[in-house]
Image (cartoon, rainbow, N blue to C red; front, top):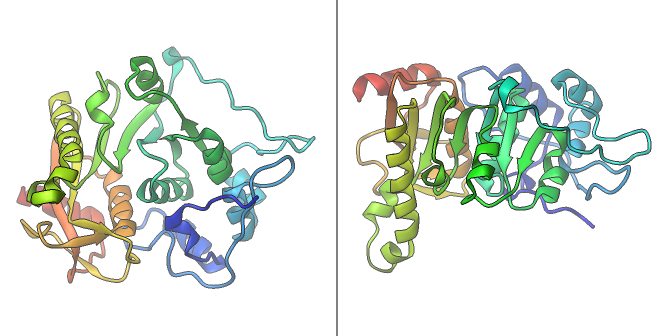
Amino acid sequence: MAAVLPSSISSYKFSHSLHDNLLSNSTSSTYRSPVGNARKRSVLCFSSKKGKPGFFDVILDYIEGGPKLRKWYGAPDPYAEDGSILEEADKSSEEDEVRDAVLVTDGDNEIGQTIILSLIIKRIRVKALVKDKRAAMESFGTYVESITGDPKDSSFLKKSLRGVRAIICPNEGFLSKVESLKGVQHVVILSQLSVYRASSGVQAIMSSNARNLAEQDESMVVASGIPYTIVRTGVLTNDRGGKPGFSFGKGCTTNGSLSKEDAAFICIEALDVVPEKELIFEVVNGEENISNWKDQFKKLMEQA
C-alpha cells in the first residue's frame, strides 16, 4: 500500500539538480528551498516491506543513488542480507554520550518534516519525537532516531534529550514539560505567540491553549539560562517558499504571514548562529532579500 508522504514534500518533484544544489550549498547562507525548484518526474513511494525501500530511501535512490549517499553520510544499510530492516541500534549509555544530535520536537507536522529533511542533507545527526515510529521509519529510514512516548513522562523526556546539543521546536508544548535542559547548547523556537496574542473573539478562544503552551515554553527556556533563539512569525501559510523576500520590522507579525517552508528554512539557518544569551525577532514574507543569514542574525542581535 502506498505510504503517505509528508504534505510539505509530496507536492514537489525531486531532480538531480536539486540534489546537487542541496549538497553543494548545505553550508551556504544563500537561501535555497529544501523542497522547491524541482523538475522531472515525481516519486511514488511504497511502505517498507521486506526488501522494499521506504520513503526516504526511494528519494535518495532517485537523486543520484541512495546507496552511495548512505555510504557518504555514514548511515548503516537499512537492509540486511535477507532483505529485512535492521533492528534499532542500542543506545549508548548516558555516561559516555556525545552531544552531537539535533532534536526536532515534532516530526509529524509539515514544518518538522521539512526541518528533518534539511538536517539530513546537512549530514547532522537527527532525533525526532513522533507519534508513529513505524511511519517515521518508512519516511526517513535509519537517518533519523525516531522516539515515541508520553511527553509527560520524565524518563521519556530524559531519553529524548540524551546526546542532544540543540533543540528545534516547530510548535509549542514540549519545553514546558522538561525539567532540565542540562547539556543543551542552543534552543530554537518557532513561535506564533504574536498571532495568538493579536487574535480576538472565537479565534482567541480556539488558540488559548496554544497561547498558554507557547508562553510556558518561552518562560522555561528563559529561566534555563541556555542560549535561545525565538523566531516569531505571522500566520503560517502553505505558499511555496523561496520566492518572496522577508520583513523583520517590529509588529510585522500582526498582519503579515510566512510560508511554512520559509519558516523551516529560517530555523535551520538560526541553528548554528548561537547568541550569547538570546535572540528574539519577528519575521514575515516581505520585500527584503537576504543573501547572508549569519550577517542578518548578527544585525538583529545588534538591534535588540
